[in-house]
Amino acid sequence: MGKKINIMICVTRQKTCERLIKVGRDTAGNGNAQLYAVHVAKKGVNFLGNPDEGEALDYLFQVSKEAGAEMTVLRSEHVVDTLVEFARKSDISVVVLGESAGNTNRDKSIINELKSKLPDLEFIIVPQA
Image (cartoon, rainbow, N blue to C red; front, side, top):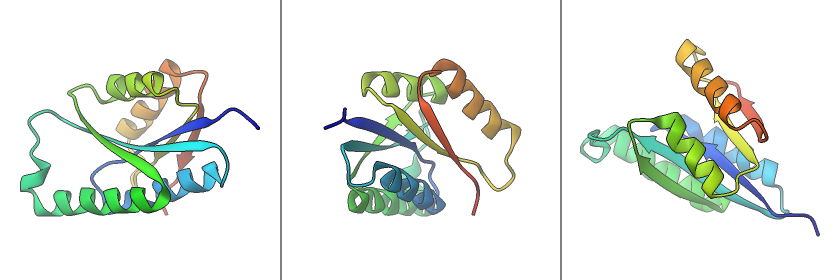
């Protein structure tokens, strides 16, 4: 029996992140893997007061649950550092991230920053559908 792997799925407040959760689930297969869907909310952002964002997060909680993933929402001004800390604390070995439709420089920056701070991890970058 192999070592259990931990997979971190980085999600935003969009229902389209369902595709990332599914990729994480498929990567885990039916083997020894623990799935963590992680969203970092900026401090002071009240997503519960925004019906669309609250509904999207609620939807992602449901999708995570169905996929066998534990969903965590963290609050921080420093998204990358918070994800790095979570990955280290949770002994993550695979990170699933998505590109947005525009594949913006900000997306590339976050992906590259995570890769440089977590060089020993496997990254799965999911293109926009």
